[in-house]
Image 1 (cartoon, rainbow, N blue to C red):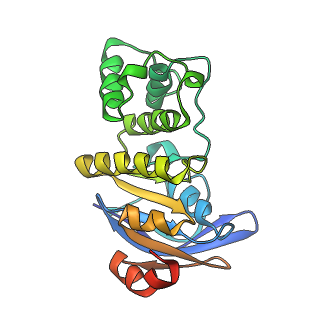
Image 2: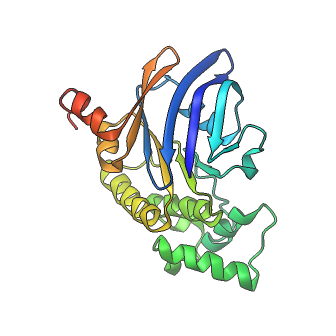
Length: 228
């Protein structure tokens, strides 16, 4: 199964970004370039929160353009983790199933399984304010994983963390993705993220233009320039 963006143009106010790429199931994509070049705009277009004014977006042989964000095979994790401070870690995670989801016996089993995956089971009854920033990021990841979407878009959700901690969380997420055949799309302006993710690259050139590189082609062309 592939996600295919065919000559897409995504509009955000007066700004548009063009992109064209194909990513297969379980493969990863780094959206790389300076701030303000449209990386988040592309994620919002893929997930259905911004319109495409040209092109086609296919998953397998089915178009996604007629689907609402909740019905697409895509989940997005924003810079803000949006955890509710007054409820526990486990209760925050179960909301991944829907805004009215409750901790029924069946849901509790699902939540606890996900919390074990992200090494947070022991923190399940604690409030977000009583765990670390890295742990709060993992709560948000767990909530996304509970939705069981095959594509996870990361709009710099770990930007507030130092690189060592961010690398630790990405390592965990990449390990889970490998086991579950998930594709990760990671927005970044840090060349180290490209190397660590180990996927293809959508390079943002500015003025709404992008260029898609397979991972080896990108490294061959830019490794010395970007010191990766």
